[in-house]
Image 1 (cartoon, rainbow, N blue to C red):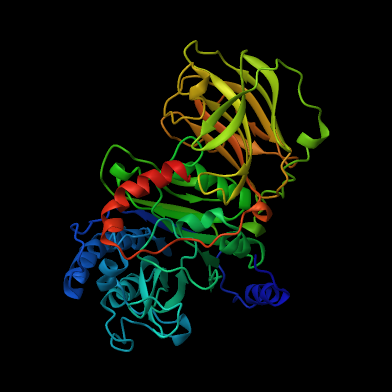
Image 2: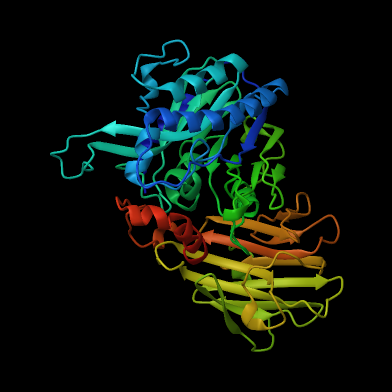
Length: 517
């Protein structure tokens, strides 16, 4: 993890110098994009053909950017991999890459297109921002030359990075971020260290990271805790994995748990289970989108607080274990059983009655649930589960999870398997856990993959409770904790040069989604 007094001081100073014309709210936009993908090939295309494909995708993004600007949006986030997709090797991605300079170069590509060589993508993105007077975040590939005599330098003489760029309303490059935690991306390299990228505007302080980065302390948590950003810009190519890791479920919960705005733009590909974008505030989702029925993109807009910490509605800090550590485990039947969510072995106990108080433990984590159903459906079974340990096949990230979920069937061995519909409504629920970490996020997912804005809250003592009447039918109610200090050491990502890897990537991505997540 990264920490320094200088970094914190610099962050505070940057907040102080924001000029007087600051806005209390702003209009944010995110666009879920159905990417036009390249034809499958194991040999690189020409640079012209690569730009031709990227131009087709930018044509679609342009329409969304213009529409967002016309509706008053001051910033728009577009997805990860939006310009060219994700199925590449190091060799086949290379024609799509450009050299993205440091923002300190003070460069407006739209006005000085030849300054950094061949940069047609950056020029077009800059012009889109400038001509529509809107901040634009786009995800693209960056290439950086290196000394081939250096053992760390790749064979082709370039480092290749999954990169976010941000252009301001004048078209100037104001931010560049290289993704650190790669997720089955053999075409890209891992930066030397996590980059902590922020920029200031009249409508708040922004931080940036990409997709899988959200699971780790750096850069995600550091940007919020030490750099005091108001809003995170989050492009992603997220494959939904029930019951805990659908995009809208996890991202909205992260915004609540971290008490920060999150603008999440996902790619849209229903064949890869990719959908789910939203504009999420610390209190509740502002707007979200989940669509597994069509192959269409979607533009979302919402007004959000520029500096949510200054809002009277800003949620207070939560002590996630305060309640759970002061009560004794609820007495009950000794009916704990083991079942799996992905590869994680949870301890579960069934919700036998229409109402009750239950406790289930695993290692140092005990999960407590009080609940009352409106009526228990005969063909539906719910269970309370606990997991504390290194997660997934890789066993690198330490999770602590308390979850009440609907089982796939009445057979208890199916508890934890994906299920998309439910009929049982809850009049009341209260979930808490003896978490060893302060980093916990609250998830509530309803039938047919919907969120529940305004229908639940987190109390200061760590209880996740419903409010404003009975719930809609529930799939999961969860407290998802990340204990970063217990992570096993690892080098993120991975690179490969083989054509065989390239051909297997679509299959590998789906396997990874189910086995790692």
